[in-house]
Amino acid sequence: MSQHLSKEQLIEAAEKFGTPLYVYHAEKIEEQVNDLDKAFKECNARFFYACKALSNINILKLMHQLGTGLDCVSIHEVKLGLKAGFTPDKILFTPNCVDFEELEAGKQLGIHLNIDNISMLERFGNKYGNAYPIFIRLNPHIMAGGNFKISTGHVDSKFGISIHQMRHIERIVKSTNLNVAGLHMHTGSEIKDTNVFLAGLDVMFEMVRHFETVKYIDLGSGFKVPYYKDDVRTDVHDLGKKLAAAFLKFEKESGRKMEIWFEPGKFLVSEAGYFIVKANVVKQTTATVFAGVNSGFNHLIRPMFYEAYHRIENISNPKGAERIYTVVGNICETDTFAWDRKINEVREEDYLVFYNAGAYGFEMSSNFNSRLKPAEILFKNGKMHLIRKRDVFDDLLRNQVEIDL
Ligand SMILES: *Cc1c(COP(=O)(O)O)cnc(C)c1O
Image 1 (cartoon, rainbow, N blue to C red):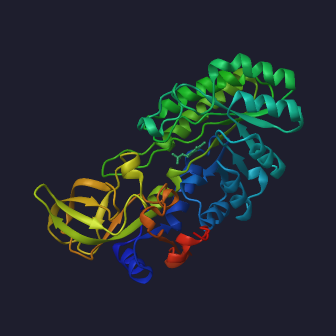
Image 2: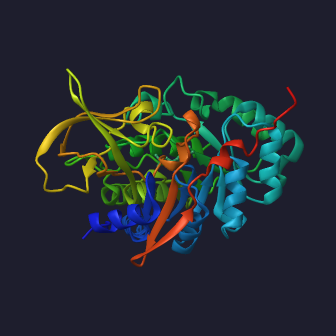
Image 3: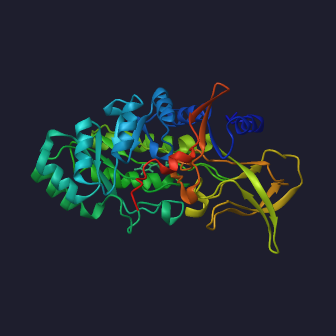
């Protein structure tokens, strides 16, 4: 039985802390971590939670308790991870287009460094040689599932070093004596077909042959979760079996034992999150009925940015007759959350909940329109904990400097 919060629990949270409100469920996160552990138990696997999905310090601490590592894309995420209790060997730094100083700061902290372009590889090799092991992020030129914006392995992508530049990588590694501990690829966010991972793995096995020092193969993420009824989830159990077989075969052929790393973000936290808003107005126009809620893309941008689908439910009127709504926000910009959605009749002041709001929800929020960022709540053992206060008016002015005009 899958863990979830009830409508009553969500309403209780909304009444107590107000809306808009992000609510997370610790037991659901735990369930997802356990599911991955189980799926890959035959593999020599490690998981690094990609914390850009949801980086509240309490979520990081929870992940640490559950035994995951941490995948970070900025030095500040690295520092948050250390603050949450992760030791440096459990932190992987996979930045893109950062300056050399940020990489060096990572080195200083003793974390795993993943380098994703030739120039930085060369600078790092020239300066440190084999004194510090590194990972290299490759672009395998495999098109992942999902849409273009969330795919990172295609030919136009800014991420990674093309596998076709392998000769150049080898030259740099050889002449600077770099210690390549791992190879990494991350082809994108929503892979439905486990064979995409296997195709990527074949490329990685081929690349590993170029470096005797490599011990880790990092396949990034790409674990999809369902967003709507009957939507698919990456079959991690099927994937686990296939990868275990592939690694065993590689081991026999090459005599080398590899550890496999993953960086799941969405898979661990998406379904554990709920975003509760209030219907401010119900507005009948000539074309549709709008449900205008007390939020917008300033709080949840995925529908507008990625055309992502989030299931929406009216938790205040679950027995109401179903009607067709266009759900929009209250900011002065087109901020449509959903067109033509069948929702139980929406009355002004009803609470609506967006599902799958744990990943890239709060994290991508802003103060656009001088609106305040929502509070965050964590449910654990049936208890509600405030883990981030709602913004107050003064937060809008916090870093502004008023000058004499
Ligand atoms: C964003 C990101 C992830 C996590 O992706 P999800 O789709 O949330 O699982 C993993 N690795 C890297 C390098 C990323 O940038």
